[in-house]
Length: 275
Length: 287
Image (cartoon, rainbow over all chains, first blue to last red; front, side, top):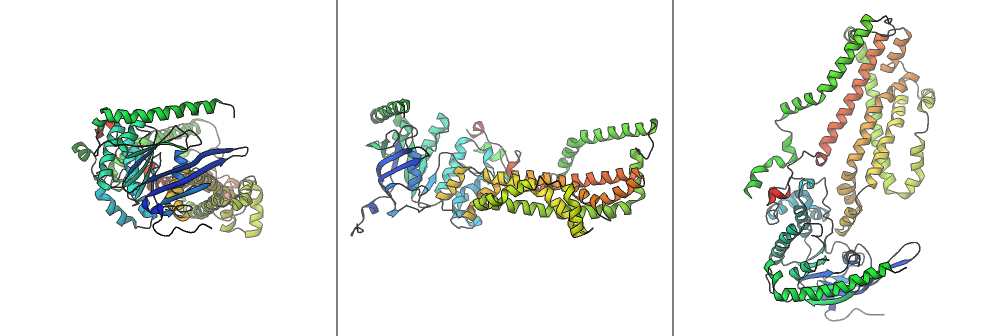
């Protein structure tokens, strides 16, 4: 029997602690390993990114951290609490914005609060003043179909933020946006994050995005996903887009690009090889 | 900033859409249905001409004018029978919508219920209603009940089938999102599944609305002593063909009225589905 550690538990020091998590999916004929002994940690107020080739299990990892999917092995702690079969500990912003088409902007951003039991009127009056900070002032009564991609992402982010969790999981939130909108959103997200002091775990396959935004970056291998590398980004804060041209930025970017390219090549070869 | 404030005033709220703009709405409706009405009038003129110049006996084909005259000369009679049929149709329709919806919810939420009941829902449509209607008369007599049963049997099906499809077509990722928030089953149903299924539910209800009047007539033909279906049977036997046509006219107007009633409820209940609701924002105006 393993007894609970006396004294400060190691998981208490981290907002998110992932320890040796493995996960496989099964279909009728075979087992498909998706994650293999993944470990990572995020401290309070940190911005941590995970990059990896597509299909490396990043989204599965997020589903495990948010408690929607159980891990086969390993443990996940959020704020020191184990998340197995526990949902609602983190704010999760999925890849698709998933705005409810039948709800106006205002009613979409209060969704999480309503689920948590806040009365709609109270939730609305809390959300209203925040719309301006998210560039949504004047759009509270508009249905999502009338919004641009960038605005939809901001609505989804405000919805995640208003769920009031210390930890936010952002799964490729800007993947579907055009380059110009995306760069605007990066600067906007940096501004919001610096103001809010949230803890963010961010999934992307865009290296530049990861370097620009993060304090630390994890590189994952092709499936089954493993942590291949961890890189601290030592660019000063606050960050700006001009930094993407700086020597240090390019150095750190190239380290990650190299690691990622090895992985992508391997992933291609694995796919090409007969099963 | 300023463009945004100027071009999107409070009108972006759907509720303020309805106020004070009735007159233009009426004009728009008139424009929309002008061609339909024109076609109807053209058809009536041709019909009138055929009965006037042709040699068809009036008991075979009365002129449209004579049909309208029946409505004018026997308004009490027509109204009394129309009221009965309307009652049957509305009662049957209401029960069918409630039953269809309840069945759909049960089918989409319980595997056991689906396996047990869904095949019977489908099989119920293979029953020739015209064949079992006499049995219903034997069991329930000439009153409202057998007609309502016939209507429910015909109209619950489109409501149930469409709603089942609507509830099944929910975006899986939306359900996952709700789960990450820790939403209860009831919250998921109320906030995601139900609104997501509404457009298909209304498609089913609109079909049911159009068909419910047909069901009422079917029920009356088999055994009744009042209602427009009964009036048609009696008038036909007396070769009062103009009255048969007048009854048909009233029946179709009833079906159309019910359909538009449902349509307007649909528009009210699914404001997001109206593409004209609220301003549309594109990237250009944002920058």
